[in-house]
Length: 81
Image (cartoon, rainbow, N blue to C red; front, top):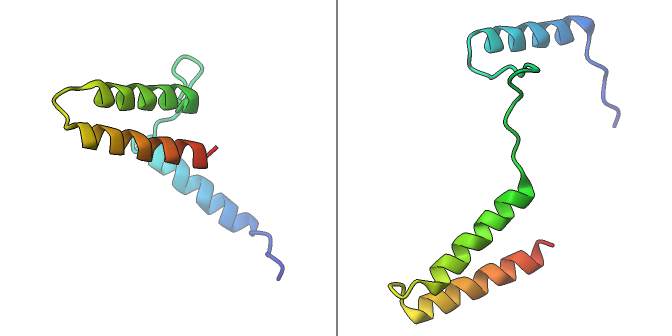
């Protein structure tokens, strides 16, 4: 199966729509002074691990729930690597 190249009219229409959306303020437009905020996967992962450890150390959470929650998160983290 081959994929057809989009026509110039299609590309132009898409560009005009994106421009209109950006001008309406629905989508942030990056500038050199204010770039888009990027998602940092490593920092997010460290923050997630911090929350897991904080929950595991919280004496208000029942012990079995802390162990279960910590173990399931550990399984998830090792299987996604």
